[in-house]
Length: 257
Image (cartoon, rainbow, N blue to C red; front, top):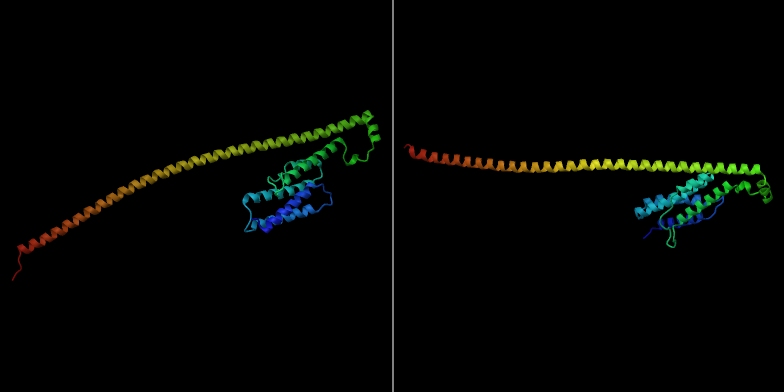
């Protein structure tokens, strides 16, 4: 059964995911404060005696980190940086409350990605904040001028080329990272394989030494038993010889009167 602290944590987490799914203004401060409270409750939950399982705690940490990353991405100035930061966010894998068909953090992630994509499209096509006050007549007049049209096309092509270069660089970095990770994994596998072989040889050598020690112990025990038996027989012979010698001495040399 969940503790009171865990129940309050789940309620606050669900509320934060609900706020994150809504379109917020720059003056919105609740989500940041709520996420800070979630971090404090998560630390207290880890120290609680009746804390959940390690898998559930990992999922809670994943969702809190997702919300923190979402807030940090929103503080970025460039739309491209926001979209790139959102690509690396990892939402939760399980629903926060029972009536969720899809995890709310995944829904928030998809909405944020779609919003960033729309902002990038508006920025590329010139329909951002700087172009909202332009009238339709001005747009028609600018389209009618060949020089302006060529300049707009050149600027659009330059922006598209810039973003294309960024995507290629990101893909190349990810490819290099994957290649390095593969090489490190193969090297670690070889080291572990060599260690296993060395350990197997050591265990075989230890077994052989144990068998030799056991054999030598048995031989020593047998030798010790034989030595004790010979010594016992020798003592019996000496005692018997002494007894017989005394009897003969008494018989041969009677007591003087």
